[in-house]
Amino acid sequence: MYLRRVKEEDGLHHVIRSSYREGECWKSRDLLDLGLDPGEYIVYPGGNGFYFEPDLEERLLAQGVVFSSDDLEHLFLPFLRPEVRRVVERYRCRSGSRDTRDARSSEEFAQRQRHLHSFDKRRLHFLRCGRVDIGDLDGRPWGFLKVLMEKSRDEIEHVIEGMERVLRPQEVCSYVFTALHLQTKFPHHPWRNQPAALDQDEVDQWVLAALCDMNTDETYFAGVDRHDGSRLHPYLVKYLVLYFDAETAGGLRPEDLREILRRQRFSPPRPAVSRMGVDAACRLFGISRERMVAMERKELVRLYWRKAKELHPDRGGDQESFIRLSEAFTCLVEGKKR
Image 1 (tube, one colour):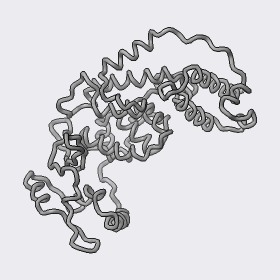
Image 2: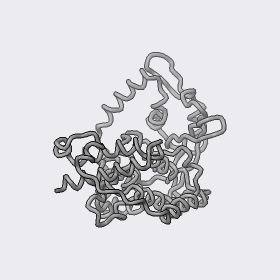
Image 3: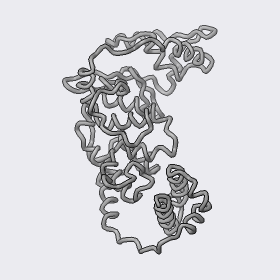
Image 4: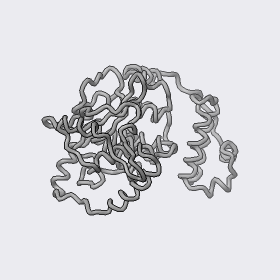
């Protein structure tokens, strides 16, 4: 069982769901709508003790759901009173040291993991390791993928969304870039694993194209009912918003995204800009030549990304200043290579 937030007319409802297998795919079903505040189902008799409303357990049992008190405790942990939650978390931390290794063989693990979508594998790998150059995840079984096995598409998204909350703002672009496997679009580029160092317009186009392709991927949406391919699914809208930080992105349809791509592809070329020197580039970044020489490449990329967000036209910046910043970055990167 897992707890999912669902948007309703009166606000966000918390719904208990479960995954079940039907044929060759996993689906999800609603078990119980807890309304706006799941905390209303928790009773505190005194001290640090608590229990759940009997009606809650009876309604779950009536649907044939098999569960334990630990299962309910896990679901309702975020809604416990803070002082009670601290006690429960300490106990769970101490009891969580038991050996939970799975007895299944490596071959069986590998077979089950082949059914996981590559988008899920890349997302989880980045969230666990923070790496863009992830290599081949299909060559052998991976223990960290166990958390996604035998789950519906909805529950997989629930698990990954919980892990995505720890992403830092400066990691979001690399995360989306890695999840969509856009390194393969720049196979011969020396910095194909550094999205901030690539041509931003080209990366943006590939992000849009990849999301449109994912929206029609039947393997990714296996077990999902009522998916209208004419509009970008909420599972993918989230990544459009994450990457472009656009509050209105949810209303875009795939054909809207493709129209953006078409306009960018056939837009007139930018006017040529004169070659910038190292000193001028350093001044634009607000650093000295000595500081530039001492900086590591990752530090320079982070500085570029921070200033690019400040100057980006979509954030109220000036188009010409943004172009000059990109030219300055190229100049400094080439200077460090030399």
